[in-house]
Each structure stands twice: as structure tokens, then as C-alpha cells.
Image 1 (cartoon, rainbow, N blue to C red):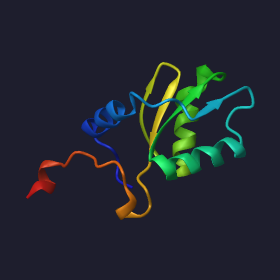
Image 2: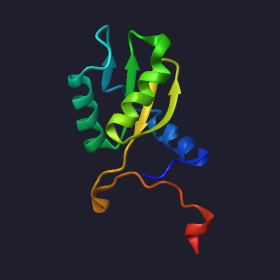
Image 3: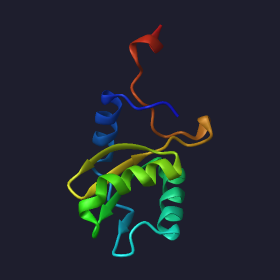
Length: 106
């Protein structure tokens, strides 16, 4: 997947504003079960929020680790909530359409 531009991240953060966190990182940190749950939710929803109840000091590193492990992009971190995006593997099933880039409009 290509890297997200700043405009893409802003758009995704705006789309995620009304969403509730689907996963909370607790005292056990990022476990296999947590990664599986995040993976399933990314496939189903494409854009999700993950709340950090514990490990707040390491949220940037943990978010990057989750994104790398699951092939997702970090749209942003707001407070103790990370916003992750991964487009659906099937193009026809994608719900979120990123704004077109000027080079793509022609």
C-alpha cells in the first residue's frame, strides 16, 4: 500500500471522528488476540480506533508496530486513541474513497 499523504490523513481523521474505539490495549499490551481482533475489524470496517488504557507512554511505538504487523497505515493519534486505516483487499468492497490526487484526475 502506498503511503498516505497529509490530506489523506486529515480526511481519514475526519471520517473517524464519530467512530468508537473497537479495541482497548490493556495491561497485557499488544497480544496475538489483540492483533487478531484489530485485523478482523480493519477488514470489516477499513477505518478503526484503538484506545490505549495502559502503555500510554509507548502508544506511538505500539501503534507503529500494530500498523506494520497488519499492513495498515496510521491516520493519526488523538489523545490516547490511535486511528488505523487499511483498505479492503477487494477493490469492489472498499467503503472509504480517499480524495483524488491532482495527478489522478486527468
